[in-house]
Length: 243
Image 1 (cartoon, rainbow, N blue to C red):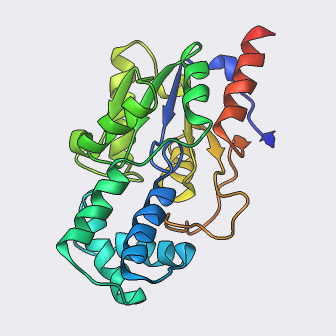
Image 2 (image 1 turned 120 degrees about the vertical axis):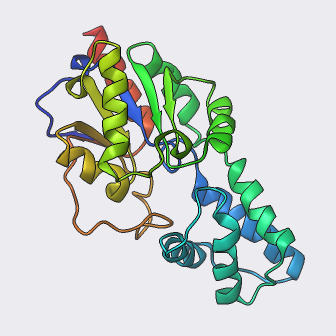
């Protein structure tokens, strides 16, 4: 599926900025994998989607740590909800599992295609140590990468975006030359619209109900470009540049 309301063609951009966790990297799958490994050891089963709801609520509690370090604390909430043992071993297992989360099946190919046409910039709410693992799994496609260790804040804080704008300006570009690409309405699509960016929503959960492990936005933002998978954006860009 691909729809667009954008007035700017894909050939008008020099940079594509990306949310990483949830857009390029399947963190929800990694959370479920970690919990399933724990549940199997304990001889129980667990509803992965229900666990993501608990994770989502826990992730935005006061005192939350940076991702994915916060998975240990969040696991404590999940353990209490599903009667699982809350041990240091299991907390660390969750941090490690999400730190090693894999790309979505289309991510590597899509990023390689997009890299032919744009400078790719990571804007992740993950810490640097995890981002470096993710970037390696993605084939090191990024021209630049921003993490919470670099910015000192998380999206949707506008300051995160302004730091990226300043970096692009040093390269001779501006925010008008950027297509911001993400799956999170809350962290990315809404704030990018407020800041006057053109955006592309990658609706990874189009076949599932709810927002999974990502906080629900107060209101839905109609994106400029709308795709169900990143490869759809890559293919659309390829066609646009070949026309």
